[in-house]
Image (cartoon, rainbow, N blue to C red):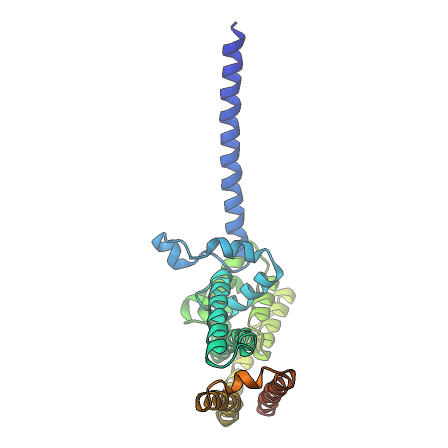
Length: 314
């Protein structure tokens, strides 16, 4: 036997096995990543899956999701219902911060560039909290319907997993989307307790915690949950009306909290427009910079004080 041909055949076989092994490893890793995303409630975007179009900044998103900041941003975004990945959000926020820095530095004074960027970071956090709170409020509004559907389904003899899937199909967003995510996690093998606890962590509210606790206890104890859910439905209806009345009464206070800082910003723009370069001369000395920071701090304290006075937990 020719040793050269034997070596060539062994090389070809080894190369083929290496290529096949690499292909199997890559496909297995992709399936594992997809399964992990589905378990974490971050499956591939449905629009991208239907159209075959990849999401922008996918590489940034993958790298960012490996960090603690990326995971925190992803958790916040998943609770807001926005059609954004953590990478997209961070890229857009970075672009907005750069624009704010340049606008503040050119229109006011260079000293206000970093301050505008910090305010932009704070504004991004406020935006996420506002979107999250808005989704929580919408979900709370639908909780009586959720409890009613679950009570009717369990009264008909359906299992809790089936009842949750049926409620997800019947309800509109955001309750339908959140319950569909819970149903998908149950289908993938997660326990009812873990899936419902993650839902309560994603959309924290007293009403949802009570509902989740009722369902978890009923699932563990195996008792009848119909009577508890029907009583809970009436309680949630009353709380929904109370929350609506309180929110209407506090709308003026919340508007005032945002109006006060805007008045301060307007006064800065007015002073600089009436006297060209006034803010640059004021912030040219350490004393002027300290006074400007003190004024901004007072406006910030006023904002939080007004918000705290207008915050009533129902």
